[in-house]
Image (tube, rainbow, N blue to C red; front, side, top):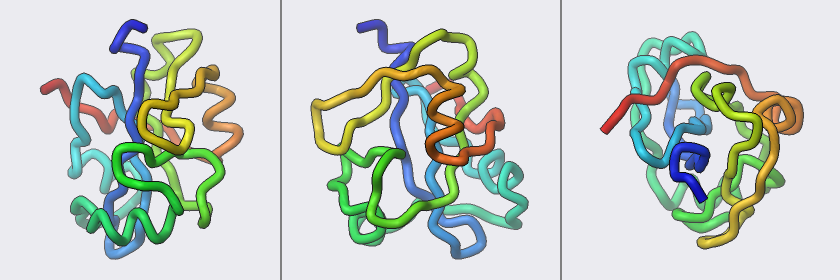
Length: 118
């Protein structure tokens, strides 16, 4: 599987509200861009335990789909460079493939350039 089509789900706090950022595994989450994308003044990475409690998934396997709570989500616009992308299926090592448009539809995500190259 080509790593450029694999996306990771990272939980961050946007003005104190738990939010998911979905970015390529080859890069990282740009917290300033993520804050702008959701209209927040600041963003910081969420505490892993808080992310696990809210989603019901373990860190390293957090899926944007089917979590315990429906969190606000932002998908990096680079996902639309591909017909199909892979996101976590809810446990480490399990990925599901779908189109970026389907991911937006299923999660209610907004899209913005929130990823940055490592």
